[in-house]
Amino acid sequence: MAGETSYHKHDAKHVAPRDHYLARANKKASFTEAFFICTEYMTTLIYQDESGDLGWAFDNPNRHGGSSRYLTIAFVTVPDAKKQQLWRLVKRVYEKYKLNPKVEKKGSSYTDEHAMYIAGRMVDLVNRHEDIKICAITIKKENVDDHIRTEENIIYNYALVRKIAPVIKDLPHVTIIPDKRTIKVRSGNSCAEYLRTKLWFEMQSKTQVDYIPTESTDKPHLWFIDWVANFIWRHYEDGRSDAYNRLSEILDETRLFF
Image (cartoon, one colour):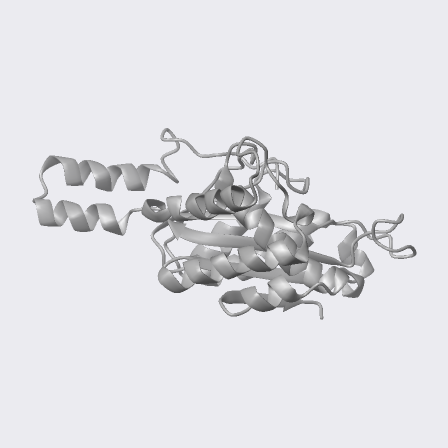
């Protein structure tokens, strides 16, 4: 989603708590105390993307004048210290298929055979690292009521927050990084604000949330989640299920309006 505002160090409400505890660790704390302070406030990164669209034209088939019937929003949670695990997987895929590492290859351009291989590597990754999680929510758009369709940001934000809030509610700090070129949803700060409201007031969570839309051009971590979103979406939209069936071994998934 585009339009969200990133929060920087001068924003005391969101980033200052982490800086405060790091300052404590640097000043008077013992080594052991500093270790636990820093560990407690180490951020979890959440790379997010989606596959499908938010159109509502169902008279014609998708790709032939009509809209997609499904929208999949996917995200991967990874400790900051392990983010290179995603990059290494992407690198291995690029090396295997002799791809140009300077050019992003979208998930939609992979054959089912290649998608199946990549999904297998993702399953291996999650099985090796219990603190890396792949999650998704898929909306069956034809079942969304007409009055909701006029507010695209509401359905998108509702679906994302419904899925992501329970996953992160016990974490001290998360940085959500969506692809900046993703679906354009109105109300720039609405998703981050809605998520904070859900966490802090409804779930009594103390999780601090930063929201930093980022260009995927040179960010292989976002290529990773683009692939995930497409492999799940193609299962629902096109019945191409090989990669999805492999991913389902480790996928935390929700279906909405089914």
